Amino acid sequence: MPEAYIIAATRTAGGRKGGKLAGWHPTDLAGQVLDALVEQAGVDPAAVDDVIMGCVGQVGEQANNVARGAILSSRLPESVPGTSVDRQCGSSQQALHFAAQAVMSGTQDIVIAAGVESMTRVPMGTSVRLPLEAGLGLPISPAQQKRYPNVQFSQFMGAEMVAEKYQLTKDELDRFGYESHLKAAAATQRSAFKDEILPIRIADGDGAEALHAADEGIRFDASLEAIRSVKLLREGGRITAATSSQICDGASGVMVVSEKGLKQLGVQPLARIHHMTVVGGDPVIMLEAPIPGTLLALKKAGMSIDDIDLFEVNEAFASVPVAWLKTTHADPAKLNVNGGAIALGHPLGASGTKLMTTLLHALKARGKTWGLQTMCEGGGLANLTIVEAL
Image 1: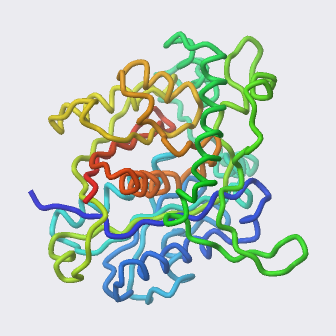
Image 2: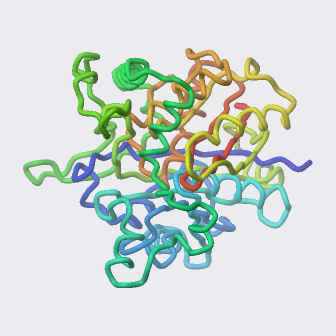
C-alpha cells in the first residue's frame, strides 16, 4: 500500500479567552501556520496540492471556507485550493486523515492538514445560537427527536455520564486535572514545546510588540486543594471547570506527502502514518467513542496497547482519558506526557493537528517510535491515528 509521511508540524501556543491571541483574525492566524509549514519543509508554496482545514465554528470570521481564507491570508499563491472540515473536536485530525488518504491514493503529493479556532472571536455554539435567534431553527430534526425522544445532546452531560458509567470518583478526576497542569508546567520549564510552537507577534500590555510563544492557560501554581475546591458544573456531579478543557484560541498544522513527494523534496520525514480509523458510537453519552475506537484501531493495525510508546488522548473532560485508561489498561506514564487540554487548552477545530504536533515532538525527544492519538467528538465520534516516528 502507498505510504503517507508527515514532513513538518507546528502549532501556535494556546491563547486564553480574551487573551494574547484575541487580536488575531482566525484566517490570519491560520495563515501564519501555513507559511511556517512551507518554510519548515522547504517547499515551493505553489507545489502544495491542497489545504484541508478543520474548524468547528464555521460562522462569522470563520465562515465562507476558512481554509481558503487562510490561504489568501498567507504567502501561498492563489492557485493553491483549500477546503474546510467539521468533525467537531476531531476536525483537524480528520483533515490529517483526508490529507493522508489523498496522497496514498496517488491523486496528490503534497497536502497541508491544519486547523484553527478563535474561541474568543467566534464563541463556542455561535453557529447554532445565531441562526436560532434569527428564527432559522435547530440542527436537531424531527426524525432525530423521534429516534432520541426527550434527549438533550450535551457534551457536559456526556462527561458526567462517562464518569458514572466507568465509576470514576471526583477525586480521581481532580487528581488527573492537577497532573495535567504539573506536566504542562514541567514541559514548558524544560523548553519541551520550543521546537513545536510557532511564535506569534502580539502587542503587550503597553502596546509594544512581543512574541506569544508559551501556552497561556497553564497554572504554574496549581494545587490539588485548589482544584478540589472548584464548583461542580451540576449538583451531584463530578466534573468541574478545573477538570474540563480550557477555552482556547489557536491554530496548528502538518504537511503530508506521498512517497513521490518525499523523494521529490529530498527531506527527512518526521513520521509515517501507520493506521487511521474513525468510529461512531452513542451520541447521547457522546464522549466514550475513543475507547472502542482504540481497541478497533489496534486490532486492525495488528498491534497491542503495549506496542504503543506514547498516547495523546484529548482531555476534553478528565473523565474521558481516565475512563480510557481504565478500559484499555494502557500505561498511565505514556499518556499525555506533556499535559493536555485541561492545562494547555482545547482550540476545538485546531486540536487534532495540535495534538499530533505535540505527539511527534514528544516521540522524537524520547527516542520512541509508536504514537497513538484519539479524541472524543460531538455526535459520538472518534478519530484514531497511529504514527511511526522516523
